[in-house]
Image 1 (spheres, helix red, strand yellow):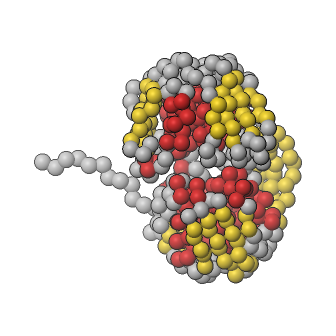
Image 2: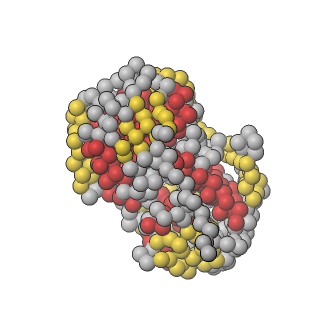
Image 3: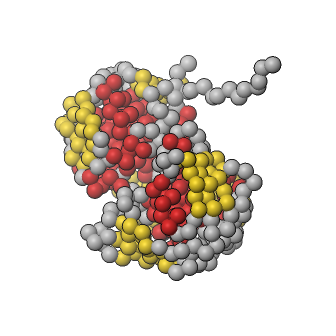
Length: 452
């Protein structure tokens, strides 16, 4: 007797080729990092939190489903507005089943901190790719706080998190820059008595600190990076629901921005981009390369700085990117590699070993993909050097993206300028962070199509 099987979705190859200049206004979706945090902190607040501009992607929906399993109601209106009915800082309940967050590392790591302060137990897992990614960096400090966590060998998913109602406040120095680890500890620290202190020697994105403060938590930041920046959270606050606006994701906007820089005669407007200083490293680097970027209408929305960006095409030159800039642009190195491939001269990217443990080995994937497209590259354990010639490379390759959304989007952008089209073997991962990527780029004039 044959057993029933569930067919796996087939890969969806996409191809990009040269076309007309890009023009128009691109309304890029909301920031993914802020979207995850908006849902989670809204779930810990008292009352109903209304969220506008939330990214509607697979990763963010994974967080919403997880919160629903934990007892917080999340609802999406037809107009795209989300409503989160919070339970209070320690009001979540044990889930009835395993929580599967798909490919979302942010969901997995932050949920560990969220569950830590609840007197419940939950099993968190993910897809095959996420189950290979390291969780030990968040497990170890949470265990110091009194959380019991059991994980697969090497500190990988699935992991069982058993929270505690009497969490211990700790002082913890981050061994490597990680906004996810920092955020997990802050979420756990909400339920701890006393003050939880986190020390970081390199700045990382501070969306959690800004949002917690916006919702009423007492959180102080002091010191400087040379001596260690100290983030101190006073535990057991009452977070109060507030309306929240999620700004445009600078990491997603980067694809349209780089494409506009590279395609002659292009001019594109990108409104409402989050300009948090710990997220704008790529744009600073592009300006150093000679890109024409014009920021305007600077403002603040719900604790986050925001501005509108106009990008104009023009030649780029290779640069050396300071290693200390990596935390502010860690997700943007793949698309920077595309810009570097078309720039005049050598672009050096160091201190990027963290790319090896993302959704894929992004450093290796970029080196292989660029080489296949005719670009000279040098790869090291934590560095990539790209030798540009001042003109687009040959292209013509079929790039294996390894289920990585940023690798897929980066090589589709490169295909818009190469002599021969570039195909990525699977466009499905793009939905995890930027489901409107293809129609948005087509709306600007990009030639991206499914391969039949």
